[in-house]
Length: 151
Image (cartoon, rainbow, N blue to C red; front, side, top):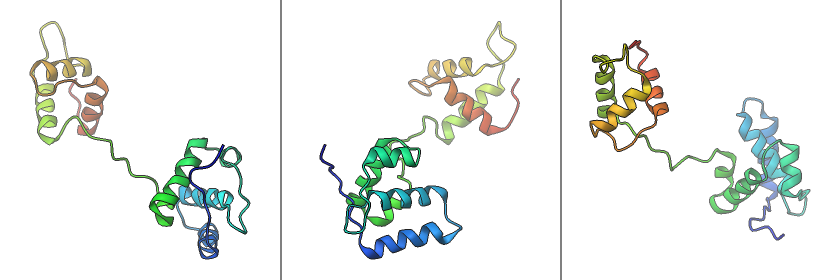
C-alpha cells in the first residue's frame, strides 16, 4: 500500500526532534510524537519504519501514526508536535441555559418525586423547550460543575 503522506525530515528537523527528546521538561505527547516522526522519516538518514511497526513500538493505533504523518505534511513541523485541536466540539448549554437548569434544579421536584434526578432535569429542559434534546449525562456534568447539592 502506497503512503499518501511521506515524512522526509531535513537534518535540522532531525536535530530539533532529538534535542526535544533529550531536553527533559517537555510534555510526554511531544516526546512520543518526536520519536514517531524520527522512526517514520523516509529521508536519507531515516529508518523508514512502517506505520504498523511504529504503532506497536509506541503503543498507539495506526491511525494515530497516519494522522501524525498527515499533520506534518499538510500543516508543518510545529503542528505535528502539538496535539490536534478539537474543532467539532460544541456545548449544548451556554451560560443562560445553565442558569435555567440550575433554577429548575433548585425548584420543587415534580409531584411524586422527593428530589430532581438528572433524567428528570433533562426531560424538563426539553419539555420547557429550553433545548431541543439533551443527554442526562450532559445535565450531570453541568450539575457537578456547579458544586452544589440539590438533593
